[in-house]
Every structure is written in structure tokens, then in C-alpha cells.
Length: 92
Image (cartoon, rainbow, N blue to C red; front, top):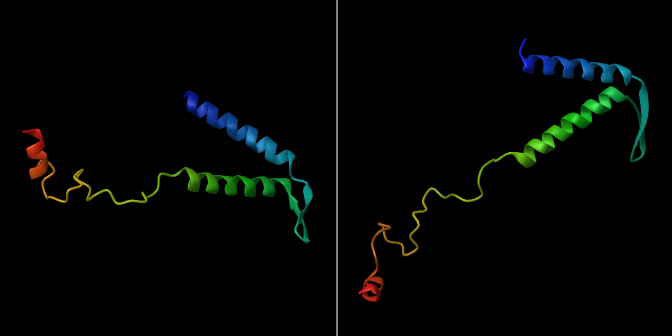
């Protein structure tokens, strides 16, 4: 077996042991309501919410600006290598 497979198996076994040790219900008070939820369920909910928040915050996503039409020339001419008359006078 490869080392990656062994590490995945060990992690799965450890997670199974942790989940099986935390099956008892726990009292949660949310605002004005009281809920009895097992620790495993609460750990899964927190893990999924944490994953979703981490994904939304860390994803590259779409850019805020459209850079596809930018050619690096602020003068508005069609060719970025063309100098204006003023620049040509200054150089010469």
C-alpha cells in the first residue's frame, strides 16, 4: 500500500473512534429555545459550516473588475505603441 492510502485509513479510523465516543446528547440553548442534539451531529454541523465559510472566503472567485479591454494605454488611441504629438515633440 502507498503511504497516502495508509494515512487516509488511519485518519478514517481515528475519526470513527472520535465520533463513536461522542454519541451522547447535549443540551444547547439557542436564544430562547433549548435543543438536545448529539455531539456527533453538532460536530458535523460545525464542520460543514466551517468548510462552507472557508470555501467562500478563500475561493479566488470572479474578479471585481473587467480587465479584458485594458491595453495599458490611457490616451484612448487604438494602438498602445503610438506616441502622441506632444510626446514626440518632447523626445525630439
